Image (cartoon, rainbow over all chains, first blue to last red):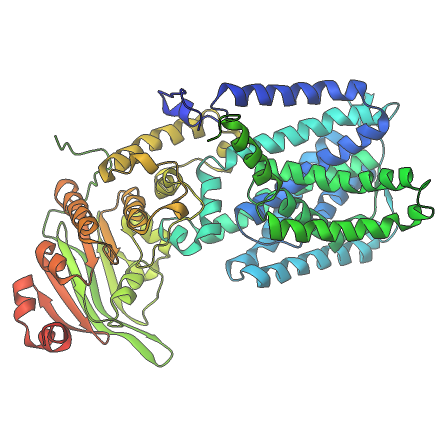
Length: 350
Length: 274
């Protein structure tokens, strides 16, 4: 902790940004996020939008897995619920886009809550298998319930309009950047606040020592189901955003592989960490893009490497997860903390 | 300078009235009988010790009271504003009635700070729902600050100011025991169940802990049920002592009565002083 900073009220002591340098850092990040889209081309904007959606989804998953300690392999299924709810509402019933998103969030929260019921009896690997069942059930329903979902065929979502303005026309990545940024900011702020107050504290207590939490007056059933619901709410938000941003919803996008990718995000970023979820989402989204461009620039030197890129990508992906688990189980968030700790006293760190 | 702080308990009972009545509870796991028809009464405002050799059923008794175990027979009645049968209630509901406890093997929330551990103890007194918490500003913040003040009084009382922002997993054993006591106190309990609060401590730490327990009992009127193996401490601070052996109660009374009880000497003290 920096010396020379004194707080005289509990409000100030409990504030999120307690020192001037933290406030400056936050302001710089906000400024960058606001200026970035005006200088970025559509490739970078697409990447940024993918990252933003991944941030929302990763935060949602981290609420459940990292903070509450309930392992979930159902992420892909819950994303699908959000995407299909938003997509179907817009396609079949013509519900305006700004209304489909909150409805999709609430529906996904309810579905997540239902699949969270087994968590009262199941822990760890057994719960993971139960959530895997959720993943498979949802996927099966989407594929086989043709009459409603359209089955294996892609669902084409109409353009989203906001106050008569078509978001998907013209420079659509630029328009969506602001929507997705707002969603990611809201999710981040909500999560940060949640875990510095009563309900989030109960979630973490359940993760650390569920029996003690219960004896201290936390209703385990209510709070475990609540954790599934809150988590799924944001996962549903990510799914709904995907549907409207991509304009196409297919079940292939929401398989068990998606669940694993999101788990990789929060493991690499840092379990039980808001900033970790963000770093992980950035890392996992950028990794394939980086490997792609690396492959392209090397293709002149190493002929035929471009064809190998998908395989190399899988390999690097697995390698990175193993390396993080072994070398830095607390993820990128911990690495960043270490860097800050090093420079706190730099250059007089003795 | 000891003024009664705001985390003091307001019990509805007068000192000496029966507060917790355990009636003939029998608890068995498969073929093993952990408790066989144990009865016990705890009066408002007393320090009630439960002693016995290892495996006598002391912790099973506490676990039955706090709702973690469900005895097959008997009743556990808790009196406050009215009579409650604890066997019909879940652990979290029992906590809300004013029954708090600590554990034999420390069961703190290891990755949370001392402050957060104590704040979790305030859970039942707070009302913010998930929306209040996520939006934070306004209701949730006011509530957090108000309960932080209560928690800070407990921190002062237990003399753990210096470690309030440390994750409890990094603290020494003795300090963890103290934090666990603080977390239980944060519930503002009417009755406090302490499972070996002094196990593994040196003499100085034991003296500190004994002083805290006496202060909680005398200044705040909290009833204490204490499981402890240190006979010196038990004989010194308890008002009444119950002795368990192989799941049965073999003695009950003031320290002097228990010390003179031949069956107790045979089963328990006899081994020490044999």
